[in-house]
Image 1 (cartoon, rainbow, N blue to C red):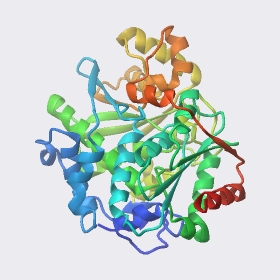
Image 2 (image 1 turned 135 degrees about the vertical axis):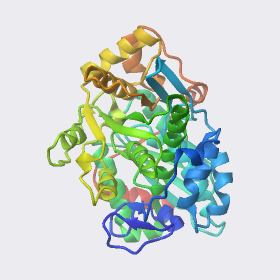
Image 3 (image 1 turned 90 degrees about the vertical axis):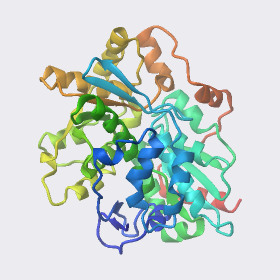
Length: 434
């Protein structure tokens, strides 16, 4: 399969090229040239996520030098627990995506991307620099996936004061080939800096730059697989397509769910749960798309005012009316996030992170509107990563999982940067020539 730019100003490329470049030369995002047809019957006998991924991803890796390594890649990258927990009898389930090494859904895609890129690298290739903007969880997942991998350098950019204390500590705790910078701005500034670096031809050539943000097609492909796997599981139980509620900021995880549905898998409406950043909810409510600076909220990993992957979503529906695509979007305030965390724990004895709380509130909102079809809620991060928010609301400690606890025991080193590209450019060059 070949991959195209959303802007259509560059020639189609193979998957290896799309992964290495991150961003297309014309500044667009890579998308598959076509989507294969995959049905419930094709996956009915798959028992593990890796089994499902091998079936779903085979067409996307076809004719790639990675094709023969697919089963090896999925066995290495996607061997993470993927519980589907029923919490409202017969109608609502939670897809727990936070059982990886950094306790967030980003672990699945980051590990897959690292496994692919390691196999694309020859021992004689120069060190490749991966620049990643993060609103909290992406950076940690990418750092964990590439930590101490020969031939790679990771540069993390996160907005100063806009991630949780534990997220910030985690981002700076890896060291070695991982370099972490807090930027005096918001996530959109970090994302802009990362894109500027990738578009700088001279810098990109000197540092062999690529991205591990959700702008990378290597992040998007594996995320489709857990929605495919979960939807097939639930179809076996309910004999109907399941509506999926996805907490979203930069739209990558939600887009993966949309693409899984486009493949033909049993997914009904895709419902986007956002925080007070209302760009998507306003658009799907009928207003013109309007990117704007991100607002700081309790669900900080979703503090995105101009989601990059909207460009991909619009491309997927380029010949259709996107607002008639069975995609809905709703915004949730900080006040409601707090109350939902309290209420959900009181009802189910399950602490949830602020992002998952957004999705639960949107689920309850749909119930209030009379939507009682089966729903799957994506739980995107472990609540212990947001102890400063969650624990005071519940009045008890939420213990971090072992991998996160181990990272929190390590020292953490972070360097501050302005939001000016010139400063980042200079620092990247210094790292490369150190």
